Image (cartoon, rainbow over all chains, first blue to last red; front, top):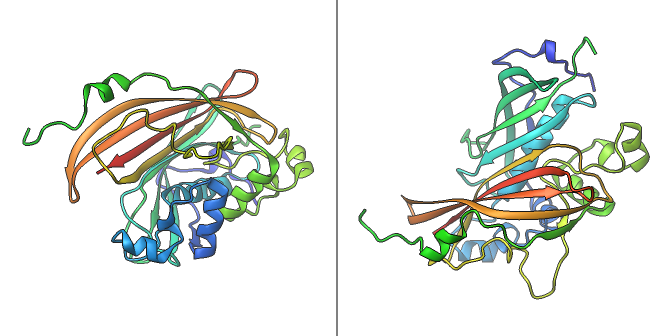
Length: 143
Length: 156
């Protein structure tokens, strides 16, 4: 994985998209990994009984995927400091969740090289269901 | 305002008050399970020696993970989330905001302290809704704040 440096980042730059298909297997793994066993995420009858079209992807899983998007972008030399998002729309089981990020601002604070990004997830229909903000620290070419 | 507020004096009084702290353990198996669920391939979340070679004390927590509260039989994991009753039956997750001040690693034992910071009523497509925002500060075994978690729950 090649390292991204602070100097190479420009405001408005889009980072590589991360797409993950949220299969029922992934939702079950998330239930166990997170401790959230609410049945709307893995029991189809239960989900439909509450008026949902099918099982839905956990909001917090989408948050974690946005965290992974940034982790994989910053590489070994960087660090993800903040990931915040709002759950505005549903993602249905077995659909692709596409995670995006665009550099909003770069700045230095307390000796760190920081980059703030607009981040969001998108459904296959192009709906932005999970908009948010991320902040990462990047290494400098100057060391 | 067309309708009476659902925010009672009891609820209003809860704003800003810290609830009883919760102990959270971080261990290697749960870090791996969380990382697998998110689809991470970075070995820092799976191989302790590799994580150490990258400067971590042990497997670090991926974003969104801060360990699990110690489970108590018969008690919901959300039991500590709301110290009051509201008139609403249904809950949606409105948003998640995690800030990490330093890496949290397997072996850490954290103390999580939560308080409600805001309550707002809005009317949406599903009728009246209550947005409850709470902050949890995680301190490690040395007493240093290592992460802050802001959660927004929507009741309706």
